[in-house]
Image (tube, rainbow, N blue to C red):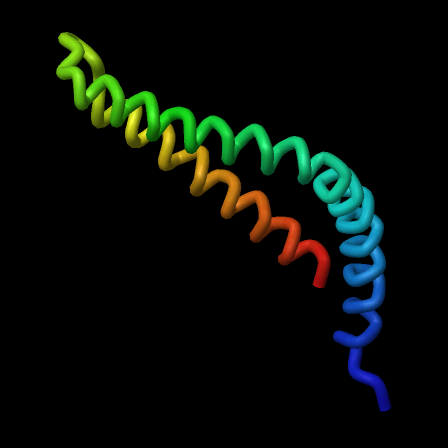
Length: 88
């Protein structure tokens, strides 16, 4: 005998696949561009922050720039994690 929850799971699973596959396809197609842009912004931000901190530029927001740069790296990690979750 099948339980009533088995019948409820099939439509949910089908809807999950209908939503998941197009989203995964778009994310996977633009992943090289997103990866390059986010990694480049993170690296350039850290290098610019280090340069301006080394020359003691007045009124340069060192901690803000560093936080933004690190956030680009974290956003890339979240993006890749989202692709990994949707691909299962």
